[in-house]
Length: 276
Image 1 (spheres, rainbow, N blue to C red):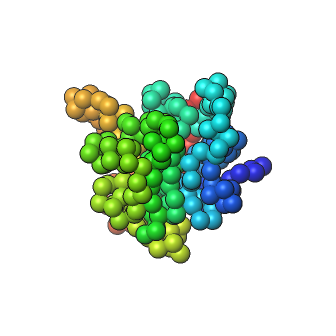
Image 2 (image 1 turned 90 degrees about the vertical axis):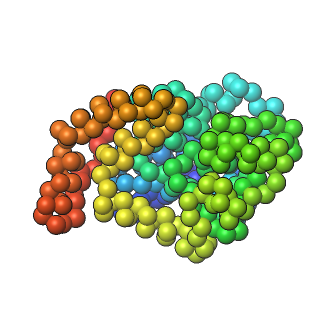
């Protein structure tokens, strides 16, 4: 079913692995198609609570394959923009583009990063919800060194995540930013040894599965992404509408019952249909 990725489900965890280790997982258009299909499958699977996005071998992603940089046109890219685009269609067009759709996936997505995360690998990792990285991993924009520009929304993402000063440095210099510095900047959440990277991500998702409402997490993700571009007034008004809707839902009833009965909550799975 997949040629350039691996896809596995283990309990509440789905793992999507870029699988071109000999090419340091350089990104191709067909790889992007397979990843969209895998995200769609994981999102629709009611047993899956969270998704890990990682790379095989020595790298997370070394950027675009040379075939993507050699004469590719906007038509080529748009042809692969995905007839099967997963994610929340109500979130707005900004998060429904070629790679930004990752942010619209209605389940938590953890980028598990080791080795190089270069070029277009950076915005792809940043569109994930959380980033766990190994001490040896590094981020390198590389665009200026290749005669390119800040691709795929990185000029929007980086300043918001790490501030304009750090973003300017990374984009202009294309220098390597290793995990410790990236964590200080606010780009990654945790640093884990390579042997524990995937296990740490799985434990995080298992904790979510044990204690958090999948419905609540889906709504909170949408709030964070939409309100990033909204005023405080709009964010508060939206939150009021969503809060009132949650009062009538089964998730709040279960959450309150679990507290009263001093037990773990058993929230219902997130159920989606083709119209969502």
